[in-house]
Image (cartoon, rainbow, N blue to C red; front, side):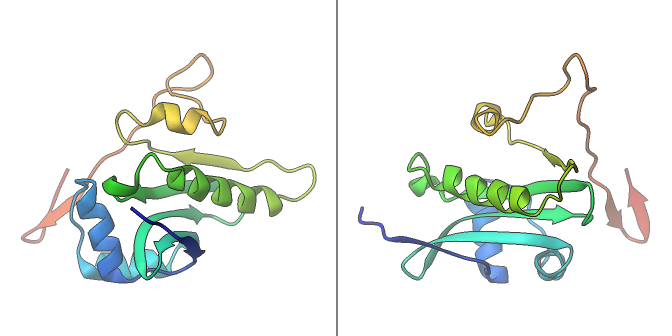
Length: 149
């Protein structure tokens, strides 16, 4: 497979849907995707093979202390080629370049199962550990005017 990878800062709603589906992640509505890609995304980097989107990563930030690294996705047929590593490297470089002197930024993520070692190469640590409790999450879904926890 011949590849010519370039990087951009935008993807379409359909690209985002395609990425999520390619790795078996939960489907989200087009409205959610549109809002997610506009706000509060602070940085989005997409890998392209010619005109074809093949990978993406983005961050959500409060603009001060917290940055959440989300949606690190590379199409399965392009995995193990260094594309994910390049996407995360570009994200982390941008974060580092924007930290003010004598300040610290907390970069968090929720790794997909089995991908923890990939992120450890960038200095992320597994939780729980001696200093930190377990990371946690919850899906909240609204059905027929009721919220389902």
